Image 1 (cartoon, rainbow, N blue to C red):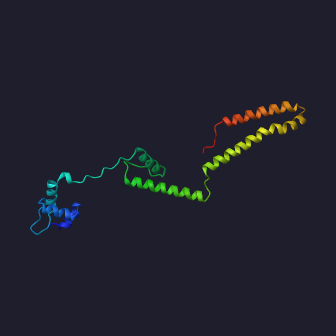
Image 2: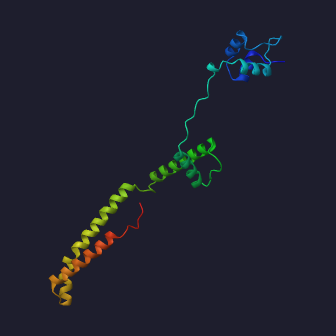
Image 3: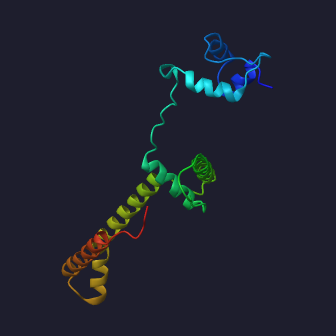
Length: 181
């Protein structure tokens, strides 16, 4: 027992009108009972098909190595390292992991658990500037007091304190920052 025309079209993955046209043009033959034998019809379909009318499979663009690397890194960070080649499941898993990470980060920001990087840098810079200015003004404020207590020349003492404070500030400024932002 064969398949109906619509049944064979579904089996072949084409429309029933394509099957009817193939029958009408003699490329396919029906069984005496009016059904289509799928084995014979598949053989005839391949043999009688016009190569110029065949649809080629859509060419897929190659996935950039950076994208594959990003998926690999994301899965590794999530504790699910990619084994073997790239698959749709790997890409979908990486997408879900990144979505969850972004949502988690957004929630942390809304809860004020995370500070804005630009604002933190600006405030840190402003604090360092105020600290530097306070230290640069310190020798002139205290040199007279120290000179009175020790009997030293106030002008020489202020010059010495200013020199040492500047040296210290330069040393601190030239030191690599231990804060990583």
